[in-house]
Image (cartoon, rainbow, N blue to C red; front, side, top):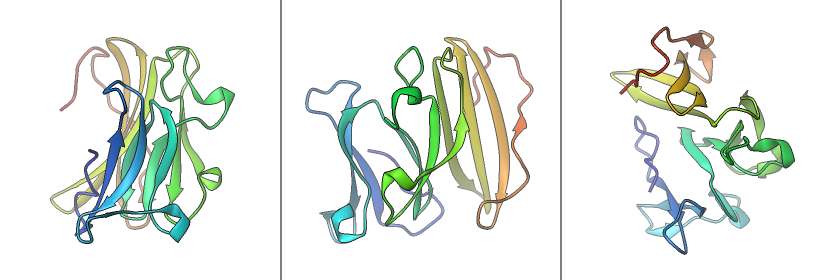
Length: 161
C-alpha cells in the first residue's frame, strides 16, 4: 500500500500486489470512495501489470513519480530503479518524462514528495553504496515551480527521517 497524496482530499491509493510476497509486484490504483480498482482503459487510474521492483510515489493526485522498466538502461547494476519519470494521469507510461537519473553503478535512485504545514517538499536520492546516500531537496511552489534541487550537506552515512 502506497500512501495517497498527503495534502489533498484524494481518495486514491496505490496497491503493490505480489503473488509470492517478494520484492516484485504489480501496481494498481484503488479509489477508497468507490471501493473499486481504477483502470487506465477507462482513461483513469495507474496500472503496471508487469511484475517487477517498481518505485512509485504520488507527486500530486494526478501525477506519479515512477521508476520501472523503461528499457535496458532503466536499472542499476543492483537491479533497482536508475531513472525516475513523472507520469501524468490519463496518459500512457511511454509519455512519462524523465525527472531524475542516477548512474548504472548506483545501488538505487528515488524521488518522492510530501506536504507538511502548507509546504510541498520533494526529495531525491542516489544510493551510491549501502551506507552512502546523496540527498537533494527542494520546496515546490504551485505546479512544479519553486527552487531547484539543492544538495543536503550531511555525512553520507547519516539517515534523514
